[in-house]
Image (cartoon, rainbow, N blue to C red; front, side, top):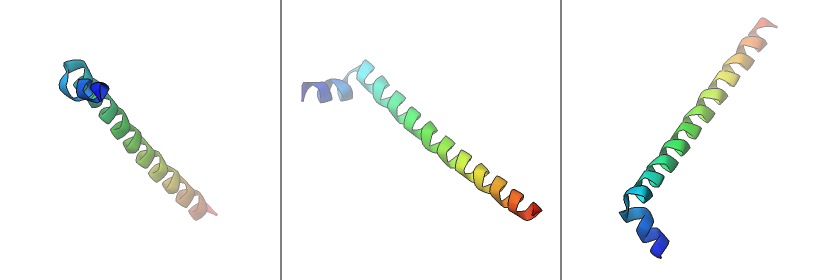
Amino acid sequence: MHALKDLLTTDYGLMSVAVIAVTLGLGGFYLRYFLRHIQEDIARHAAKR
């Protein structure tokens, strides 16, 4: 419980939460971005045939 208190009340804990949130957000963005472009490339390749 002390670790959770430190995570949510100290400056280094809040910075850790911010870094984790940004990392997960960027991971989600890149996942969606790459999957969308893969689908576009598949569709473009299928249209050539």
